[in-house]
Amino acid sequence: MTSACGEDAARSPRPRRASRPGAALRGCVFATAVVLFGTRHAAAFVDAEGCSDLDAVPIQYLIDYQSAIQGIFDDNCIACHSGDKPPAGLDLSAGGSWSHIVNVPSSQDASFTRVLPDDPYRSLLFLKVNCDTPGVGHRMPFGLEPLSDDDQALIFDWIAGGAPSGSTDGIFRSGFELRG
Image 1 (cartoon, rainbow, N blue to C red):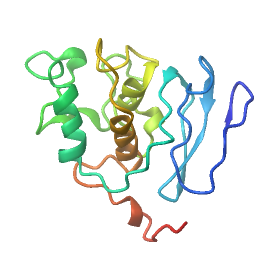
Image 2 (image 1 turned 60 degrees about the horizontal axis):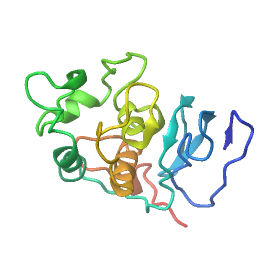
Image 3 (image 1 turned 30 degrees about the horizontal axis):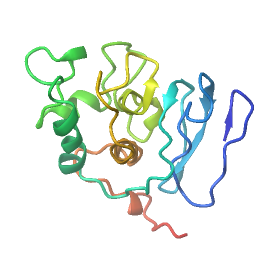
């Protein structure tokens, strides 16, 4: 992986999360390849700063949206993002949150998608919970401590696993079990 700033990122022989854009170099534009679940995804050019490095967090391959991702929203987000007029029109309440985020353009900047399945680096939700300056708006939850690295990594892994409304099936996604 190479950044626009000309430095090579570390390589790993096993599938893993690529270094987060901006984690090592602040204010650089990164083009990275994410190797996860046995496939290669080209991440978007992201101009983000102050991103948390989540490489030390083990990858979660099986994630249930309702218990894991909705649980993060319930614990950290719905105090603001629920009710009649939530910020940015984003209601993260149980029962409707998935349909408000997956493949939905951001109301702040329509060139961003809230969650783009298989592509965390082009998903505004991930950038907003992972980076101090996500490219649009502010880090979330706004004015509070950032989500734990484990919660940020869980959101990354769920998006990388296709962002399903049920459970991810990353290990068998391509029809073959990964080895090594």
